[in-house]
Structures are given as structure tokens and as C-alpha cells.
Image (cartoon, rainbow, N blue to C red; front, side, top):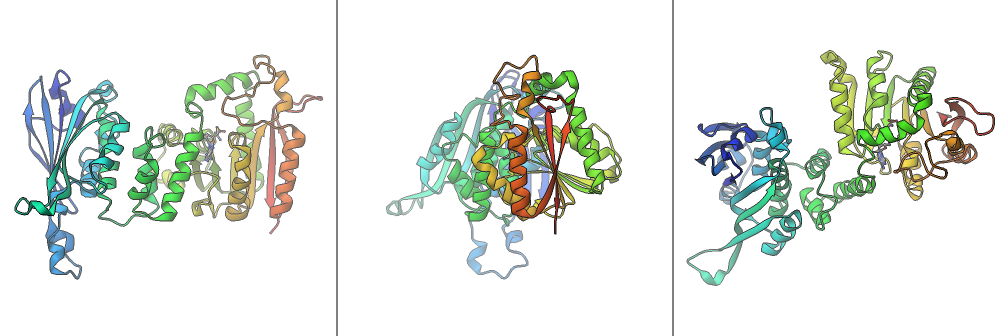
Length: 462
Ligand code: SAH
């Protein structure tokens, strides 16, 4: 099985830096199912081609299992399949992640690239192949192969030699190949579980939500497992629903700028930490953790023993991870924290088993009709002993000089509530799910309009 990637971006040999593989060398990498070899059939400043040759060991594939003779005879060693995706992820992991130590700018620059797959099995034929790659901007050429040259009557096989051409970043090209090759093949050589969703969302970041065939891609990628497909599509829809900038640093600054004169963010975090400690919550899950403002504080405080951050936005999780990395904590401290990408409006067993859940400035980002789903996920299924929810108090908005009248504090807010609205909502939840709720103002109190942030602290009655 052979994949080649060619560029004519001058000086083309820089492809070697992007792939972290020197054009003058032939390198081999052992994989659990065989070997991968990387070499450059051509390497000039005008044009450079890197080749990834996959040598799948068909005997290894069946070793240890009781097999029938025909299982030794398979197309797997000769075609592009999930084996190739695994090889791409292992051999070109830095390039796939869009990183390049020596030429960081080039890794982010779209350059002319041509990927050629010697044999790609396409269940759904050339039409489906085009449906997958053309919406992503590729110029696709495909040459179909007959089933057997000796017997033309047998017709066409599902194998194609495919060339994909586009001006694109190398990391995007590799991500597309990583996801779409097994989708076309409609098969995976390994067990597909929940972690496969995370891989799909990570490598599909930035293109999958908008892809017209996203449902079919998701279904096939997850080996047609209905539960996984449903979960993944739900997360795709939720992340598509987000304001694209809402998790970017500059956008949070927008809200911070409105609230800045009273440094509300700090007061909010202090109030949450105090409430957590008062309820003796040592294991905490932060739902909608964003870029990890609260996680950072909790992680530095040895009172807390287990900390999980959840967000639907992969980008937010990535930023949170980078910010936590910058704390340079000793290795054993890292065992206390994990970050997971998930939607709060779908049941997820990973949300269970915590003393407390914090939901800081998140509910107002959910569409009102989805709020009921979130309530059940948290109070009916996850059931932490303590739940802390904060949200803006809309009555206070008139006090923000730099916020135009009638405008919400952040452009992704779907609503902001008065104190009565929030307390009404919280009291109903408490009654319905058998919790008790207390309210606390956060920030400067105004006699007429109250405080800028409102907090509800729920305690489980059972
Ligand atoms: N709690 C953080 C971030 C608040 S911003 C802080 O106080 O700094 C709101 C966050 O909720 C965003 O990061 C957004 O990605 C996340 N979010 C919005 N809808 C979500 C959903 N349905 N599931 C999970 N997270 C969601």
C-alpha cells in the first residue's frame, strides 16, 4: 500500500521539515501490524514527493486466532484502510497535529499538495469518493480497476487509484485522509469504542460539522454503531451551534471588558471555590470549563483530589490544556486532572461519581429548549452531592456603562435572567430532582438591581 504526497511549493524540499522526515533518508517504523517506510522518490527544490509505504503483515493479522484458510487471503495488505490511518497518526503525528518546530509558519500555510493513493477501496464507488472530497475543495481524479483483467465481464471492482489535489495545509490534508480513508473502505481493523468519537471530533475539527455528508461519515467512521453515531452527531451539532469565536480568548475578553471595572471574574471564581470547600467537595467536575479558568485554580489547590473539565468545544479544551501545561506542575499532580470533550445536553456516564459539579457562566449559552435535557443529564443521571451554577443577572446590565441598553453581555448568550427568573428555575429543579437550593449574589450589590452575577448552590437531599 502506497501513499505519496507531492508539493511544488518552493523550496519543495521543505516538505521534509513539515513531515519531520529527512528527504535524503529512508526510514522504517515498526507498527503492531507490520512496518511503515518513509522515503522520497523525488526531492528537488521545484518538486518534492514523500512516500509512505505500508507493509502489512497478513500472517501477523491472523496470528493467535482460529482462522479459516481464506482469511489469510485478504486485500488488507494492498489497499488503503484504517491501517493507513494508524500509520499516518503514528509516523506523521506532528504534521497531522499542524506543528512544525523548524517552520511553524509553513505548517499553517496552505501550499499546493497532491496526495496519491495507489489503491483505495471505495464502498459507494467514485460518486461517494467525490461526495467526500469535493466539498472539502479537492480536485479529485480516480481511475477505477476492473475486478479481473482476464474476465472483463465481471465488471468493475471497488478499488480506485486516486489523486487528490488542492492548495491546503499539510495538516488538513492528513486529517482528511485520516478520517475519510476508513470511511470509504467502510471497515476498521480494531474495536471501536467511545474514544473513537473523540478521535473523530479531533481530526474533524473545523470541517466535519459543515460537511454535507457528515452523517454518513460519522456513521461509517464509528462502524455503524448506533449509540456512538448518535453521541458523535449530537456533539457535532452542539459544537456547530456555538458562536465560532465564543471560545476564543479575544471573545472572552469582550465579556471581561464589559465586567472589568469590578473584576467580576475573580470574585466569581473565589465565591465558587469557597462554596466548594464549604460543602467539602474534593472531587469536582467543571461542566463547560471553557479555557480552564476554574480548573487552573483548583489544580493548584491540594484540597481538591480529582478534577475533570468538560467542554463541547475541542478548541476550548485545547487552550485549557495548554494553559494547564504552563503551570509546570510535578508529574504526580497530573493524575488529578482530566479534560473531556462532551456535550452537556446528552447523558454521559463520565459525569458521574463526583462530589460537586460546577456550571460557571454556561447555562446562558444553551438554547432554552435544550435546558431541560441538561437538567436531566446533571440532576437525574450524574447526581453530584453539590451543584454550583452561576449566570448573569440581567437586571444589573444597566450598571455597565460600556454595554449598550438591551444588549446581552456576550454575543453567544441565548438569554440572561433576572433574579426572579433564575430563582424560579432553580427552585423548580430542586423540587423536581430532590435537591435544596440556596442563592448568593456575586460582585458589588446594588439596592435596586442586585449583583452582577447570581449563584445557586444545590445540595442533594438523598
Ligand atoms: N466556565 C467557563 C467558560 C464559560 S463560557 C468560565 O467560567 O470561564 C461557556 C462554555 O460553555 C464555552 O466554553 C462553551 O464551549 C461551553 N458550552 C456551550 N454549550 C455547551 C454544551 N452544550 N455542552 C458543553 N459545553 C458547552
